[in-house]
Structures are given as structure tokens and as C-alpha cells.
Length: 353
Image (cartoon, rainbow, N blue to C red; front, side):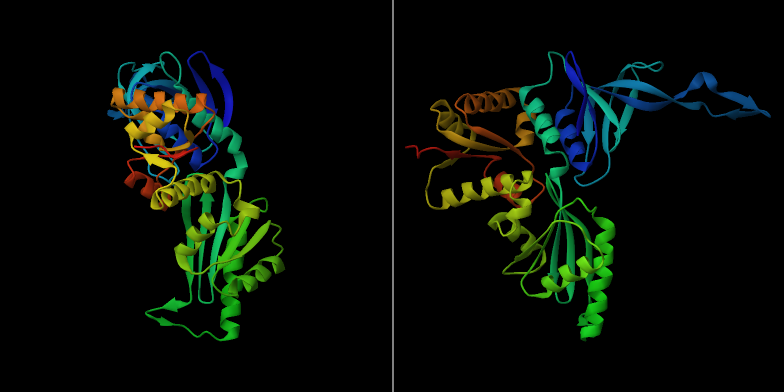
């Protein structure tokens, strides 16, 4: 994400990838004004030709909507923002839908300015930049799974297998070699040279796969990590247990997942942790919160009282130099966070309840 221009009550941003769409989806809640280059049919251009009506011409124009609702599915290429036209050359007061995609520039504003949690989320997205992504490849002797690690979750890219129809195809050395070489070619086409890669898996097949990549001229930084299990579980193991920290150690998603996992670990041993709005609020008022991990949507709830309470808690945490992590729920740890009510606080000391 790139900041193009600051506005009196908002900001103009350039959307660069799918992670940016997630951020904008959080910010474009009902009541926000969202402007971008879009198209409308100009009814004044409709004519008759040979006795038949000719459809009105679609014209490009800058359109500002008062947002009513948004629709976004994680790991897709567009965000739909629906609302009422506030500013445009035509059709003011009509319904319209913006379709926001990577490459678009969008102006987002709100009466009184954007809320502090929104600005924090934008600043984090801007600072993450290209560091927000990495390739993650789980290699077994007869199956290779390819993922992209983004700042908001693990995206499935491809699944290659020598297993077919419930039986394994021939696993001779020559067949496996051809299989690995074909997948390595695919991986080279998917991931740019500057994107770091993590190759992991429970056996030694991952070493051979790295050799195949290098033989094809792969220049990516590669971390090769052993895991205790294969499949998607291997990807989760690498993220949570630090086996590939040389590549992923400073990654936004890894920091988020590990904070949640640490909270769950402390909870299991009755340690310095708390969850739920009231206990977290009490801890924040005492300056006891070291880190607050919170589902980003809680800071944008339609229930104004609840939203303002969470904003107040975040403000108290920051005033005592605590960290705020606005988490996505598009990964396993995020789902566990939801199970804790959407927020968990790592404490500087254990509180008596």
C-alpha cells in the first residue's frame, strides 16, 4: 500500500495487493466516504439508430460514495463498496458500487477524520510493503503444497501430487525426479526472484527440491526447515515454532500468530494473560497490558458503545507503552482468537481476579 495524499478528513491510497484490500475493507465501514475513478451510464447519450434504441454510453468519472456496505472475501482480487453517490458529474443520490482492485487509487474519508485504529492499520500496511509476503513450500516425496504467506494469512497457491485414484503412481527415482523438476518450474513462475522462500517438510525430499530450484537458476533467498509433520500442518508448524525465522522472523503474520499462541500458552498454565472486554479493560487501567491482540473488526463494530469501549482500551494500552496488534481471523490462530472472544492481552504481571 502506498500513501498518495493526505486529505483534510482522510487519505488517498494506492492499492498494491490483496492484503491492502483487506485493510481497506476494515476502514470502509458504513458512513465513510469512498472516492475513486469509476463508470456510469450517461442517459443523455442514448440515441435511436435505424428505429432502435441505442444504449447509453458508459463514461469514466470520479465518483464519491457514502458507504452503506462492503463485500470482501479474503485472498480475492477485489473489494466491492456499495453506497449512495455523493459527488459525481451525474446521478447524485443514486446507488453505485465501487469495485476496488490492486492498482486502483482510492480516497477514504470520514466526518471528523479517520479513527486512530484506522490510521494505525494504514501505517502498518504502508510500512510492511514488500516484506509482507513469502513463499512457503511443503515438500514430501510424493506431494508438494505451495502457499503464499501474506500479512493476513496463508493463501493456497497450488497442490501437486503423485498420488492418484487412491493409489500412488510409480515412485521410481526417475519419475520422482521428473515430478520435482516440473513442480520446481511451476514455483519459479509463481514467485518473483526477490520473494523469500521457505521449503519445509518431514523428510529429506525438501533438500532435493531446493537443489532442483537452484539448478533452474532460482535466486530467491531460501530457508530450508525440517518439520515433524507434512501437509498444511507443516506450514502452521513453521510459522509458530520459528524453524524459518531467517526468512519469516519479522513477518507481520508470524508476529501476530506467535502473540496469540503465547496468550494461549499462558492461559494453559494460569499465567500473566487475560481475555474478555471487562478483564482487559481493568488490566489496561492499571498499565498491566504488554500486548493486546484484537480482532480488527472489534474496532469497527456497528455497536457504537462497544466500538468506543475497545478504542478507549487501546488508547490506555498505548499510553502505558503497550503494543496493539490488529489481527486477521483468516488463519488457524485467528480462529482461536475468536474463540477467546476476539481479544487477548499479554500482561506484564499476573493480576488477581
